[in-house]
Image (cartoon, rainbow, N blue to C red):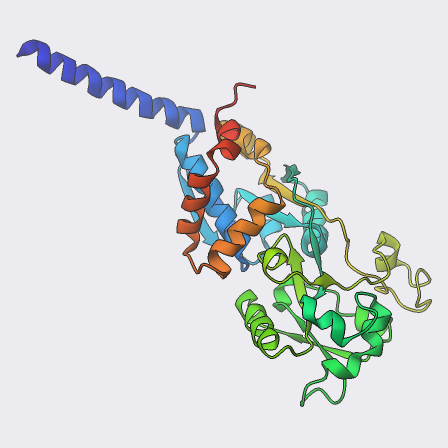
Length: 318
Ligand code: TMO
């Protein structure tokens, strides 16, 4: 009897030691704050990484944050990490925070990104010469809507993503930009146009679920150049900046609060190893936007199906 009690007591001690060891491994019981935004892959990825951090004993907390303001939030430690720094939409805010100090570049995913005017594949036949921007400009009337005064309509994402508002004018295109309020509204526009095979040109990005589901192509504007943003004399319009497209081979980066490596060393080590590819990001979006899963469930499914991908991030000895 005594022996059994002793055994039980020692296994309880072993268990609690193990969990203490994990907590010490994470470095702090304080929650790692993971900000989520308003497109599916970013929210699912945030939950994937949060669930992986939990596997090594960390405490995590999710907070819904503006996708531009988040760089200042990470810089001052209100949020601990950012998992999807898309070059096209966020390089400016990220660089501003880097210049102020407090945020660190925690590495680049394998996924190469693009954020640009886009159309589903059937539109190609409706406007000869696509994806060239001048061909699109010549077809502007086909993209007009009853309320657009004869101008072509470009459906853009939420204003929060801060897209180029001068490009249409700089390139002399007979188009108007209509911002929708959410990513879901973009997919609703796409689905409704596709059903009736109507011309549509809209903001989209890759990796996304649309890569596999719609084919389609991005509009080829004059190639991006840093000078295009600051030097009016550069490019096809000698009097205006913004006469170019977004970066075609953009980065997807991770960022962290500068105190993270000291406060949560194990989690930071994992963060630096984390590397999602095009297929990983597209799949995360698809689980929500096509399969209609909840974000946390989609993350759990991705983890279940991809152990060979994430296991070396958590358990590699080097
Ligand atoms: C920031 N986003 C990936 C929606 O273009």
